[in-house]
Length: 122
Length: 209
Image (cartoon, rainbow over all chains, first blue to last red; front, side, top):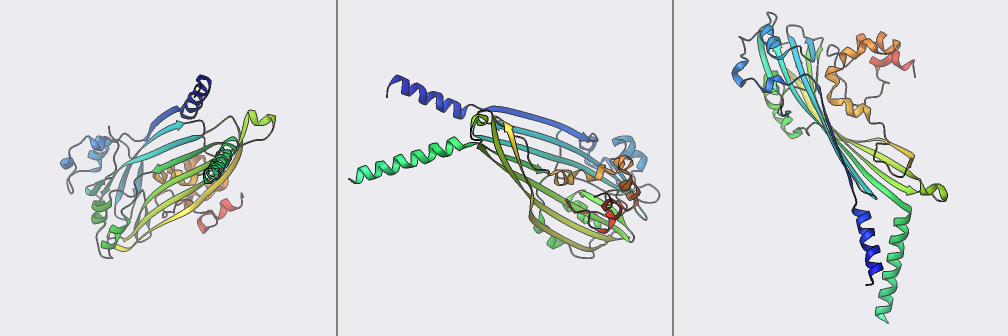
């Protein structure tokens, strides 16, 4: 193979594999403070609405059921990565959700609560 | 003789590949994962009579929930979006600077729904997964682009409906008048991702279309 042909071949391969990369990320919603507290910190029949508000702040949504009040907390993390080649581009975006929910009785005492299995690292 | 035929095929293949490379100016795959896929098979263990605390323990907080006249509903949702784009070189002088791109998106949707009575006892539950055509688009772009050509907003918002209720104050007039029927407020029910506005609760909004 002559030097000029080899040069053209190398330049072509370099052009095909030359890539641009991009990445981005953001977090929306409330601060997922529930991941910082101990599991037994919230106790059914003892913890009150005031305790949860004091610990976690205002919920994303407050739902009024017939005999209960629900505090719903949601945090959303978006991350994206892009690999930009000359003839092939690949962009991936992932959204992760971290949720906590608390059910209180008419007296404002905790009846049930749960955290999502999916979580966002703090 | 056989070698020369083989060479001819090889050259023809090379020509086709070069020709294809000349006209194909770039392809892209755009993927979006909105949350984790749902454990749909686990819903079989949940029959009427179970308490909502058991559902919470098994699946965690729902994507959406709402009060109902005689109880409440939990709705869990997962959406995966995949958009394929194919670029073609525009012929002529203009082709040096622009390329034509066609994009088509598919949505993979998974839903679980649990309906409880006012005592928090499960009345009904079901799970479903389906694939939907999430749209297609065409554009002519400068050199190359890796942006989306399809409008998949309705799917992308599926995980954050729960925090949208405050935005009702800024809706256009006809939507604001209809807000008491809103299925995003957590007080009137829930709605599946990408449901068309032809359903009853959006009656006033239809007047705007």
